[in-house]
Image (cartoon, rainbow, N blue to C red; front, top):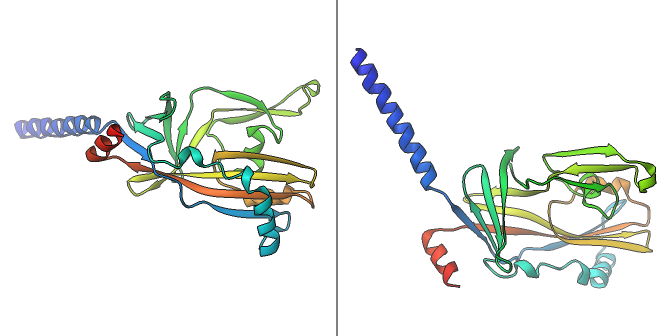
Amino acid sequence: MIKFIKIFAFSILFVLQCCKENDISNYPISYINLPVSDFSFRAYTKNGEITDSIKFNYLIKKYNYLITEVSNYNSEGKLIISYLSKEKVEIRKFETNKSDTLTVYNKSGLIYWERKDTISSPISFSFEAYYFNKIFKYKPLYYMEFATPLSSGYSKAAKYKQCFYIKPDGENLILPMINFLYIQDIYAHFYDVELNNEFCENCLLTLGINDTIIINKYNLKLKKQTLSNKTKVNKN
């Protein structure tokens, strides 16, 4: 009986070791972006989404040039992602060939790729920290706010680690993206493009009566690479 237990225990250890070795051999797992083709426009005021076609088309025609910057991902293979392990992912842009290694987390069905450096910035409309509280749906895993001296010109600031937000799509991945334009009380506007996040409609409650937000929404799709795919990309 003792001999049988020893053999059984050894067999279990052997299987676990093989699984571990096979798990390691699966890495790196690579993905490349596909050309963006599914972007759409939405416009909102304090009262909700603008559905009047005349008003909507006027806004898009007037401001379209500010929020259609998806040219960086119009070609396949501009962004290369490599999972080095379950916990680490490397991001590399084709034009610069510079890479950055991030930590991988999974939370509530969303994948987070977190940068290692901490950023501090005032909470103001012109800074990213404002967007997390007002416009964006997703917020970094590490995020905290603190009071600042009034002499700085701001009442609060935030410390956070930037994240990428990714949705699983079968064996592929999707980064939800937005370009947005905020028209504030007719006299001023702010815009930003190629932002990896989703628009939060709850922010409409904070808009002024004459404010408008225009969103250009699209998905950045990352296709998992097979051996034949990798050979083709390397040749290009």
